[in-house]
Image (cartoon, rainbow, N blue to C red; front, top):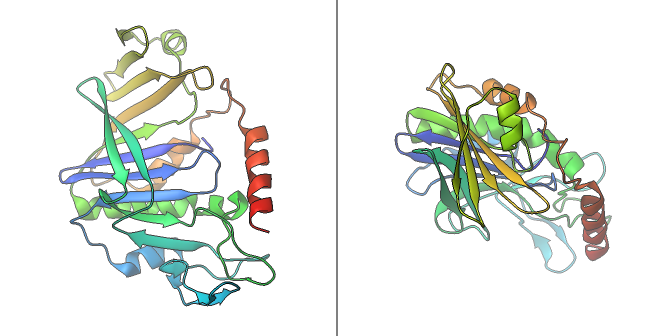
Length: 263
């Protein structure tokens, strides 16, 4: 599974979530406001250091965020922010009592650790943020590792929810796989529920739109034995590329516009 997925780890003291942008150029980790995590954990896991102000044409120098990577092989650095009042908010989904429950994350509701959303580096600002998907993608495994480490600081792990973002299953797909499904909802919003009793896995589908027909959330029971490797292997075991929506042309267009905007 390449883009647009989300993880939510349920703990005894709240949820910890990891959001990935369907453009492939951003990761955001959310955890409860009352929880403090060591800076060293972030720096060691994401392989970054405390940032220093860098050259900026408008202000002379600028501190874009709290941490940054080494300078990339072309231009720019990966800048990592950490704050309790983020600019954006997101809804992350979990399965609870055979229903989809949304947790609002970001803004002033959670702490947020995030990659810088946009690219600003240039020949004149060689240390400014670079958010090109080519350089953000290698941070996937690092953010998943940080997700698990932070979750274990928040509380005891109870379950993991994976949201595929793009189409993964449809009701017909689940039936063809041998699942007994339960449909619910009304004319404008439909839900499909299935469960693997042997593996204690729950699956819920939520009807979408003409672009993404069904959203898929899968819930797995878990414990503190959970590792980042488990989640990485789980993510890699799915393929959400054979869906009805090919985002590549749109992604290319948006990246082109971003480049023009930042010149």
